[in-house]
Every structure is written in C-alpha cells, then in structure tokens.
Image (cartoon, rainbow, N blue to C red; front, side, top):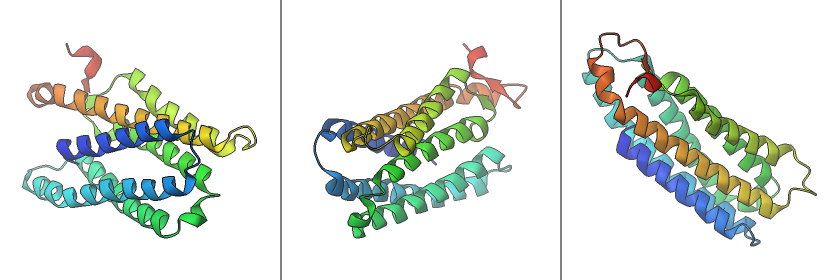
Length: 203
C-alpha cells in the first residue's frame, strides 16, 4: 500500500475510533452498525484501487522483495474483506445486533495480528523497536475482553468505548510504523548490509 493511501486509511480509522468514544453512552447499536459498514467500505475501496498502482510499481523493480509481496497480499485481503463486511453490515444490520460484540472483538484481534505480522515481516529490512509491539498486544487484549467477558458486566456502552479505543490504538500504531519507515528509508537504501536495519541503532 502506498504511504499516502495508508495514511488516509489510518486517519479514517482514527476518526472512527474517536467518534465511537464520543457516542458510546448513547443507544446507537443499529445506527452504529450502518455507520461502521460505511467506514469499512470506503477504506476497502481505496485499498483495492491502490493495488493496481502498487503492482505496476513492483513490476518495474528488478527484484520484488518478500515484504512488498506480503503487503500486496495483505492489502488485497483487507480491502476485499472490508468491502464485503461493510455491505453486509448495511444490508443486514438487524442480524448483526446480537453479533456486534463478537464482530468488534474479532476486528480488534485481527487488527492486532495484522500489525504484529506487518512489523515482523512486511517492514523488513527495517527492524522496528520491541516496544512498538505493545500496541498489537493491547488490540488483541481488548478484542478478547469484548468477546469473552460476561455481557452482564460488559454493557453495550462499554463495548462501543473499548472498540473506539482499539481503533485509535490501531491508527496510532499505523502512524508510528509509517513514520519509522519514512525516516529510515534512506539509510536502508544506502547501507552496506541491507539484510536488517535496526531502528534503535540508527540515530
């Protein structure tokens, strides 16, 4: 995914998280499902549209790295999945009401796993600092809590709030990743040992 596209998608997710945190105290489950469906569709379409440009750029390169292939596959999966999920949530919103905690929890878990895999594989040869993995761990923890905590204790307003916090964490994680990759893009290209670049060792 191109940097500008990734930045736009992350910004949309960040805004969605802030909105959820603001409206969490209202009874908006049905409206929330429809709104979330729209939020899924827009980034998904943007993501899919950017794949053709990314593939063309990869073809022009003499050597396609494993990271670039992984990013393309992740972009295709996340884009198509987002569109399908968004259309389903808008067209059959009533069916999603009782599954909303499971949906939100799964989204956060998948988001955490995505960032963990991306930081471990897709950003090579850049080795990101270990403290950055706190964000995926928090996402997975929030997702598991939403799914497994007793719903007599975890009320709908709490679920919406936790989901909003999770989306904000996801976006912040993406912003930090983009910042690191742009900051250390030049050292990666000019180094004599391109296998691994340790971000913490670069000043």
